Image 1 (cartoon, helix red, strand yellow):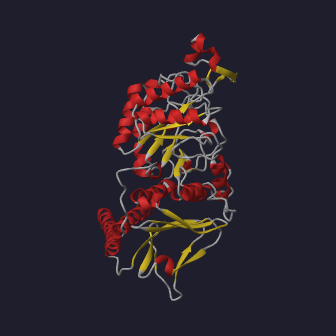
Image 2 (spheres, rainbow, N blue to C red; image 1 turned 90 degrees about the horizontal axis):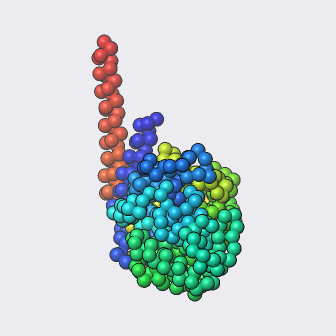
Image 3 (cartoon, rainbow, N blue to C red; image 1 turned 45 degrees about the vertical axis):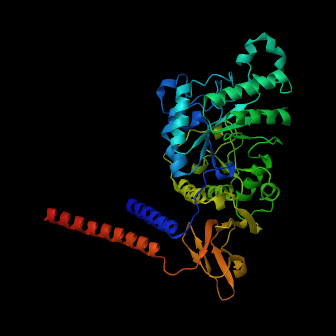
Length: 486
């Protein structure tokens, strides 16, 4: 059984490498926009415990308490985020001093949460991430902080509050003093820590002009910092957020043959109207896990849903644990400790898709054309002057065929599957017939028609040589054992 898994993995790796060798994939340019990125959304405390020195009062068995995850732990597991899954941004939530593991009870905008590590360890994480081509994004909550917040120690700031509830304080975000204090706090932070992104949370009653002023101040420190939010807003964020997007994707991919007519509802705002790209996700730290809604085999559901967020126009955002089919209701139950021993099947698929996406500017930000979107069967093109891609996601309960006219693809072309290495050529009816099994994703590249794929033949030969070598080794081992017995 172990050999079977090893042989399958080796063969897949060799053949995938051959596919890339045999196809032209445009490399990313130096100048990036947020559509070139993909975001892995995690909680520091729930990811990995890299140091026992900050584990005071931590209890990993109590889901409501700190569990021990820290900046060092993220540093140690950057390979999972970048090398294995290909994400370019690690969003690590709020890092400020807090009374709760998820950063939702902030007590300071200047101090770093000691359970997570020291200020120097945060800087080291940012540096290590940068060396691995990953940017660190942090959350900055505008309000709903702890009633023990450091600002409340100053009696002169009593009029900064508009209300308290469940131990949390709401700042008066209409108050100009509060606005300037918040802007100063985040500017000081991004001036001290070289983060690649800031996500503004708890927008509450903040008006657009104030948010735009804050965004401008952050970019005044470094224009390359991405600023987004996890709430609907008309402010000038680099990527837009629509709560309904989560529900749309969850409803489509919870089972096969679901109504998918709304899948492009907010994506079209970006594609057609040149608005900021939409954040595409199936869940986030504030919601139930997607798996909780699933009505069929969860791993397959996660594969299809995640592939859609990675490949449709927009900014992919994936919550930690999605790749291991983490479950749970909103809150501590959905913020489980990460299990690094879980099967890597979904991780491998995400990594393969991201490898292709990260190498092709066209697949990330090229022109978009919808080919078909009907009851879970989605097909679309991404194209530019240099490349043309066809993405097909068959979220139906049957094998489905899509015929693309020759005039759409061009003369003397062929369509090559990047995940399964299928080759599709025009038939006698003048169409390219794409046939996909149920619940399968494929990324096709349109290339010039050519003869024998030498690289593929060589790769296939290597696979057979490996197999024959293994058989010979087994035979020799058997002979030695028989000789020793005699």
